[in-house]
View 1 (cartoon, one colour):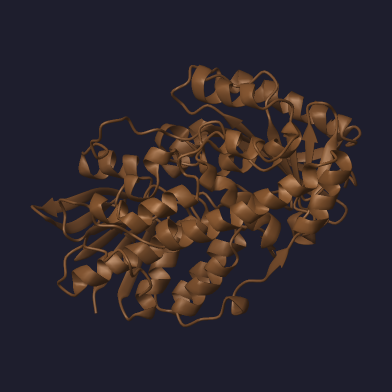
View 2 (cartoon, rainbow, N blue to C red; view 1 turned 120 degrees about the vertical axis):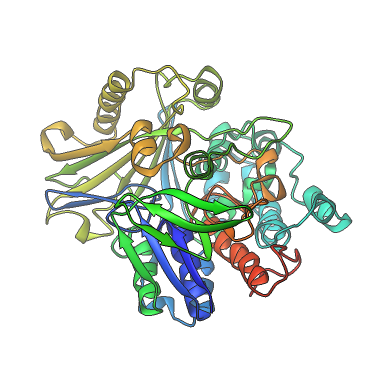
Length: 500
């Protein structure tokens, strides 16, 4: 069995370590932070706990498959509950709509608000299900060795079947008669670091899984996911080294020979996997640029994060709340003008009604995410972070969080500079490489190095993309590449078979 080193204990590295160890390989993971999870991290203070990355879990079967493929049961390590409602969304005109994981209830609710909308919503959901199932079977769960495989007749047909050639916003607007409804089922493209006005219509798969499979919340918060994966990997024999950064990779021709640690130690390794933001890894560890291509690589938005530990609880907030004071202008500000919007959209998570362990008794842990440009923008980050904080708290008060400033007893947060420094994310982009059509599936970076035979990649930078389910899928695609290389078949994937 092989001796394999993994740089980074993000979700991709954790998932891959489980798959490799369950097949008998000796796996060692080196992590810069003092805890696992990468972007799926945690902030704690004053008895309060906050997730620092994802706050919702989609595609619940993906984690089940990971644990089952590793010879384990997810239920032994993690409990995931389904939320109802999914969100309360607040719109520019002062109205709000509760969105529930019940498509027929939602069709009736939208019909009540806007007569005639129910049938359009039912059509949207039917077509979104086709997008979801086709995308998973033809793109997400497959890997390709060439453009000929990616553009085979069946694949091209699948692209058209998922309306990947159409614009997400215009496609949705053709079925839903109210802009509020369209905003509610397209803002999810922000999970992938892109705008609904630039995204392909295939991304209707996101609201479909929210509506029809539900939004999961693990007991203990989203950071409980990497903690569960770490425990499972440890039970399978994986060794973890925390607070240790890999500073350099030693290579000899087409092979990695070892890695250099910031402790001064050098570790020989016959097989290496990088679970690190790819642009940073290539530049800082190998002295290389991103793979060349005819058009530039594009990066996702940054974010302001605010963590408010309150000594009270408010009935006016759901677990997930989305505030949309505008829509198209916000995306133009962030992506085109590269400024923090004057009146930004933002998301509030209040776990107090769901998870009593997140705050002291009677208190609440409020997480706020505000999309911003990434670090290429000329922004006074300190001034803007302070300005937006006041806007957020003002809006919370208008929603019913009376005198919220007086109830803040602990506070923290982050901005793109923190994402760049702490997580090595290029340009401080919270979601890494964006998900425009030109950066998905076979058009996204490979999960192996073309010039180094024993170096592989896993995580959000490579196929199939960002988000917890995609990163877990990434571990499966990378596993196949490694398995083939170990068996002397080279790094080819064998595009039609990714389950190993």
